[in-house]
View (cartoon, each protein chain N blue to C red):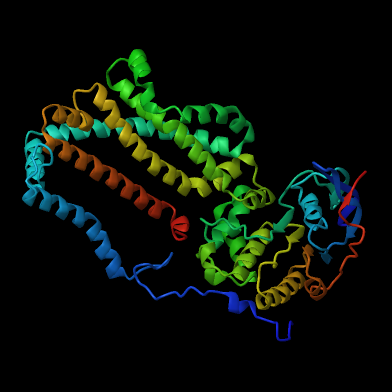
Length: 283
Length: 216
């Protein structure tokens, strides 16, 4: 303990920063539920209102920015001729097949890479390199090898998803605690049972999360692939509409793409809650 | 001797050279004994336990249990880890019977066996709970039940109560003594807590000959 007239507590040198009570700016804390729902609604409602106001009073050329009513009308028109449905189904089919194939291949590969250093050494350098090659850059090659049918489009999605998903699944395996694996050995498990009955269930939530993120990538790639050579599909719909200055149809295409993507995302989140109760409780 | 460790040496290769963590260890434990090994962090306690568990191979010397040389992990030894190692997606009961499940014991028998040991550790009411719903002490009791279900010859415990608060720890000490008296199982527990070792009694090992030393 210091004493004497020269002693000054370090406290006197401190400049306290006062912390006012707040609701909106709570750091890493929950906010009241009504406020939360209100803000959620506002996040969609405000852009809609701004859009509506700008097109009603802003005297903007509808070829540049159509009004919400015009977009709804275009939606009705495209829906009525069943073109929109055909396009949506075509895009969904490509994403579905491409993504499923990629997931079916990348999940086992990723789990093996994460579990066995030998497999990781064998594949990680190649996959790390492939990951940095943008999938759309493969389009010329894919057309050259596979023509302009469905195959190059599905293959594009496969390339875009497979490498990323493998590496992300591999990373989730790294988070399996070593103690858990050793506890399994002590309980009499061999490598195979440890892999299938301990590592796999432990990484299942991580796998679902990786798939959820990469499905978004797949959905972007299908639009890209259709911009190049397709007779139907949402990407194709947008590029044709652009050529004829049908801005309202571009908006219809964009909104449908966004809504379908969001539905996929919510589906995956739901799947995670149902299958991995133990993991979702933590989040 | 039930557990016989003869001239055990364990070196780890590091950048600074060979690190002798265990040097000429000789330990004999009789069947039914409850032995606590005390030592500071880094004194090689966990390393020793890993050799007995078969999770690690000694550099030289050997470990024999019931006359049989340890060459790898096996269900004749149960182990409770310092960190919680329950499977988070399984209920307490599923955790407890997982070892038997891997050994191919039919469902009815493993259910009976695990129910018995869950009642021994006082977790019958929580058999359907997930590990995340248990307190720290309950988690370790579930882990002990899981280790006991296969009826191992020896229970190895690696600072099992290190993460618990003092009250829970004391409750676990009496629980362990009681369990040991009732089951008659051989227990080898390591800890850095002298009080814990004294309470569990029983034999506190002079650990002076186990020290971290750089071999020349």
